[in-house]
Image 1 (cartoon, rainbow, N blue to C red):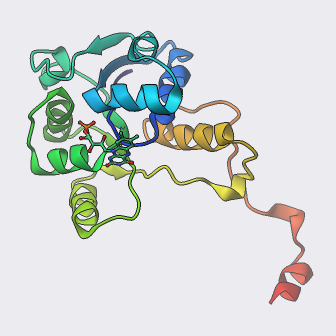
Image 2 (cartoon, rainbow, N blue to C red):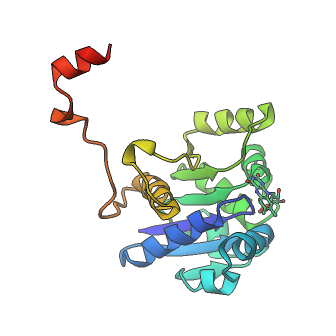
Length: 199
Ligand SMILES: Cc1cc2nc3c(=O)[nH]c(=O)nc-3n(C[C@H](O)[C@H](O)[C@H](O)COP(=O)(O)O)c2cc1C
């Protein structure tokens, strides 16, 4: 499997880093990484890591303005692309098909080739512009996957929250992360009588 991984300047650099760490442990997945100029900043500001350290987690790395990179062409076969985290600016660029850099170009290619595109969009609160852009892309088959914690998994640390979000993003490509907590129903935890007593 070949995956394009893009990191942009939205908050949540740790999400992209963790996803790359996970994929590094999956030899069957080849990663092609692009970090935007502002991703390099958030990596430094939020995760206290350098862009070079993050780049070392990927199999291939491209400059965000290298429109001649392999992932800029649909003839270069991939199994899809994830933008993690995805800024509202990049979301808007993808929605409009405005391929001014390699990230929006690679996403445009992913769309035109009808490949899987997952956007881990991060902003709050969301404006009508953000919501319209997301809806429009969702209607084209894009997975809009905001990094929302799964409280039912009872996370005790931020790492738990991050791991869960990353696992959900990788689920979209059929890459299962071992030891991911998965809801299997409340089971026998609540008897029918106990459930009835709640109401
Ligand atoms: C610390 C930091 C946090 C940011 N968080 C967000 C965010 O959560 N969502 C967002 O859309 N933009 C956020 N921004 C602004 C983006 O970095 C900015 O819009 C940038 O132009 C995005 O460009 P890019 O998509 O090419 O990386 C943040 C910027 C900084 C410095």
